[in-house]
Image (tube, rainbow, N blue to C red):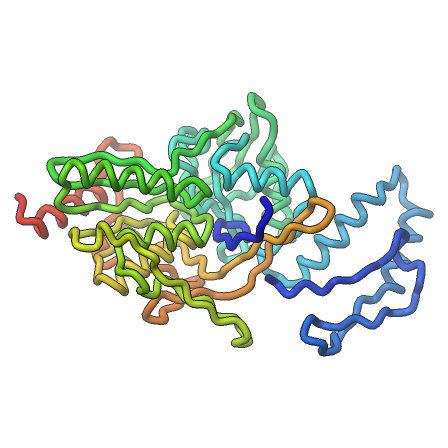
Length: 396
């Protein structure tokens, strides 16, 4: 990945304060003069003297072999953890490579997206047709145990993800709490996962398009799908964003361009200090803008899928069918560092075109519908969405 990407999973310009600690941390015990990128003085500069003291104690006292590279990575993780933001994280070179595989659409694991909700590690959504989904893991499950070991309260999402991942063919035991009380353990075999992020079918003139994640190749897949359904003369569309945990911001804006007019505001980025306000507009091609549309969402619809759903409701009064969405309303940027490691850092909150903020709130559907038993073969939410579209296009 050669350029910074704005991301939304349960992962993810931070104006980086570039500092140099030295080949050996704290070799110079004087606190260096460090400034923010705008030239202002940092109110609480790095305490290199204390780092130096701890570094020496570790090397003198620690019972086992000390790896300086691990210590350095630990310092970076600790620095970011001080933000108390579950979506900002430092990733070493291996973790960065894994993440780049994830957003490319091919990776090895169980296929589950995680985030923090009420300070608990929560399943945003299992990916469609993934080992996690097939095992029975659901959106909103709280992961509290991996391979028999409880997750520490201060564990980062990166740490948790690294424990879940592993070589193809190996197994991992995932302990979850469901609905706040039911304790279930799933033993899931890790596999190489190829994410088909767009699936579609036509049901008697109604095009049903499912987008499972917003990856680098999702726009191309969506473009092909649009050509197919238009060739077949669909009269209305159901856009299924259930269990879509998000992905790349630009991809969601590109897909919104099919349903909206050129230059329509799709999403607004607003920083807490008002120093960063960015408006993302539709670039077209607006080829689906005249077709009746409904969107299906649930508790596994997060970030970029919430952006798309919120934009379509604000811009076209599109009805949202299903359940309240996850409520991830912050923007992260992935920044590659010089040694192959990276930072995912929260840079802003995002607002819908009409200025609604969804962080921790989610989007409340216009028509609430839940599946009483998700394991049944009857899809109540999708059936209801199709029925609404049939009414709009005059079918019965």
